[in-house]
Image 1 (cartoon, helix red, strand yellow):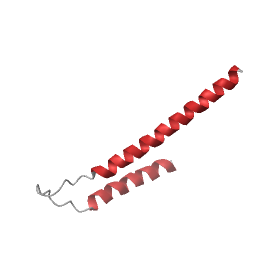
Image 2 (cartoon, one colour):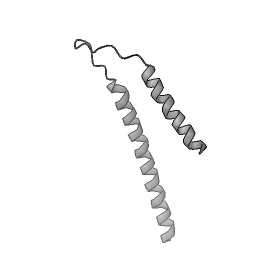
Image 3 (tube, helix red, strand yellow):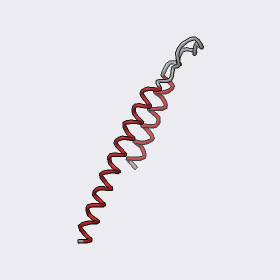
Image 4 (tube, rainbow, N blue to C red):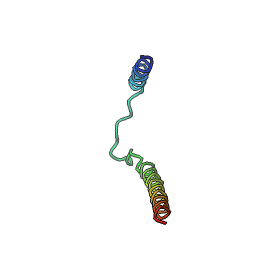
Length: 71
């Protein structure tokens, strides 16, 4: 019960904070793109590298444990 009430309060607080924010200025076609592409791509590349390293380590552990059982 306590968890449900806290969840409802959190969702309400986030919704209220969203309405209190000022709207962004209108987009001027002469301005550069307002989308920060570099930050997202860097994050995706870093998370992909971490995931790849984890998969390689898991495969090595699995391979080592498989060789020990066969002996």
